[in-house]
View: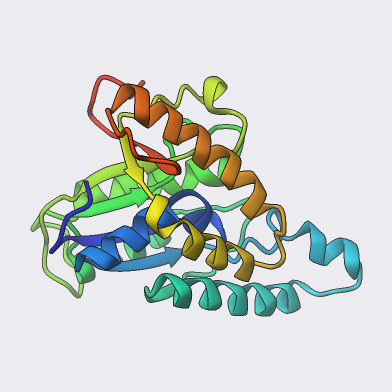
Length: 241
């Protein structure tokens, strides 16, 4: 999956999803010479920010967004990728026709050959399902010339899904068929995760997941030297439900 010259769009329902689940792959793409851009659909101001609400029950939504904005910019800077937030609000994240059209425009403007997003059956977090459904919709209409937008049609990108919510892989039937060895970039991913300071649990949690995925990769993908890995599922393959 990782090679030079790719154009990669990463969509994330909330502030941290892109980094916790695919930050290592993003670093590998950047290091290989690919062009990567990240779009957060929300700041995760409600579901991802309980620490901020617990520390200050009187904090406003806009204040939480400001904090998360600084965090995602810091994390993206460490990953060396540009990031934008479409600020659709979360919990619930609702993506109707106008917002889907905006995502379609984003895809046509960037013309990716690869899109990373949430697992399509990550149903224990409805925001994730809403995000990936909208991204798939836009990815399957972006090439149709009868749909007029500011940017011309572009070829449909490959769609690859990253991890669901930590701990629900069996329930969500996420069966990886792609692994990315992130051993060499792991410390940089940890640095980016630490920049997302409103979620201090992320580095420890995703080290456990990453080291487990490396064991899977060693056994099932012959990646014998991998100590930390990220797992993905390419849509349209046998592992998809």
